[in-house]
Image (cartoon, rainbow, N blue to C red):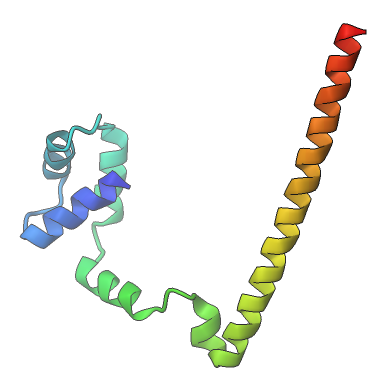
Length: 113
């Protein structure tokens, strides 16, 4: 993530986003720089208009595509589904924890006879 932040800093200051500048920003921040990641970032941003990408991202609501594509009713339904999924995941996790605790106890019982 810090690599993307470096590119955003360079963009904001009007500096060219190139390998040397990205590396300089990262080193200035104390990051152990990986050249391959710098090269990949610079190559990926070569034909990208960062200002346009930021405006496009800011225009999309944080709730995701459901609210934008389907309206408020679909968003409420999606939220309800997400809540149900989260509840089911929590219940499954608790069951797994209980099973792990039981298995751990059995292992200790076997260890001590």
